[in-house]
Each structure stands twice: as C-alpha cells, then as structure tokens.
Amino acid sequence: MEELGDRSRRTGSMARSTVLLSLVAITAAMLSGCDEKGKNTPPPPAKPSSHLPSNSAPAVPNPINDTTRVETDPCSAVPTATIEEIGGKVERLRTVELAGGLNCSWLFLEAPSTVSAGLLVGNKDGLSALYAQNSTGGLTTFRPVEPVGGHPAVIYANGSEGRGTCTLAVGIRDDLVYTVIPHLSSGNPLVSDPCGMATRVAAAAIKNLKGS
Image (cartoon, rainbow, N blue to C red):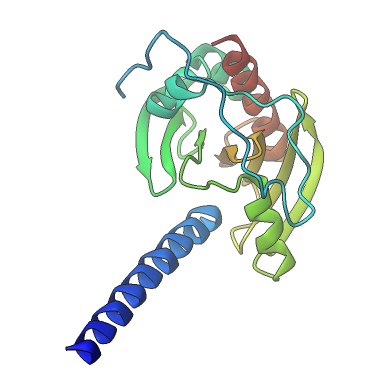
C-alpha cells in the first residue's frame, strides 16, 4: 500500500509538471506567432510580480492597471476612424480569439492589407518573456525601440519578417503587453513602413487605455 501511495504521488507530480510545460509552450507559440463590456468600477491596482522585470527587460514606469474593457473588447482600444487616418479606408473589423487573448483585426479596403492588435493576457511575463526568448536565440528579429506613449517597446519576429509586416510589443505593465501586427499589401500607402503604422496604432491604444 505504501508503494502504491508513492506511485500515486509521483504520477500526480508528473501530471502537474506536464500542465506547466503545456502552459509554457502555449505562451511561446503565442509570442511567435465582442463583446462583453468591462465594468464601470475600475479593478484594484494590479500587484507587480516580484520577479518582474527579468532577463534585462525594462520596467514599465507608468503601468496601466485598468485594462478590463480592452481585454474583453479589443476593438474599443482604437476607434476605426483613427485606424483610417493612419492606414486608409477600413472595409470591416472583427474580433479574433487567439491563444494569448482577444485581438481586433481591421481589414483595409485595399485588401488583403490588415492590422491586428490586442492585449496578450495569456503572457504573464510581459516584455520579459520576449527578452528571455531572445536570450536563448528563439527570435530572428529583436529590436528595442523608442518608448511608445512613455511605455517601453520592442519589435520582434520569429521567421515572419517580410515587406509590409511588423510585430510591435509595448509594455502596458511589467506583466502585460499590447501587440500590433500590420500585414500590408502594395496597395496600402504604408507598405514600406509597417512599423511606423504599428507605432501609431499602439500610441492611440495607450492614450485610450490611460483615459479609460
């Protein structure tokens, strides 16, 4: 009976380890890669994780604690009119459910150009996760850039580089990033500067998040 109990405890420990490894794999895949409104009462300030930032990632100096509305309604982060001012006429928008959280995807009239953006709530290590991935050689592009709206930012990719494409991650808190990913075709006026578009979209989102 004692041997059976030991075996049961070992099996339980292995199962917990498997779940943990699965969560890590999901976060890594998410990094490489509406409808419920938030309550009017702001949530209590998020408690910073004791281990963040890490892996030489910068701290977020002015964290935004109230992100509930954008987490549940990502298209509310940036008005479509603002997107059109940045990148041209929008044909339609939709909410896309990803492993890391909900994203808003705007499809431009000059298809197949799109820009997608949202909070990666599934990544609990924020920019530190990207710095860690880069330190192990897991990224093919990793470039810290000027802060966006006072928030540290990184342009990164894992083999998805190409004309009209850019992935920008901006630290909202030490444990949360907002990503913007344009995929622009030759008909879009910003096809040669997708990172410029991403920066402007992120700046608009941060402005709205601070005002929420």
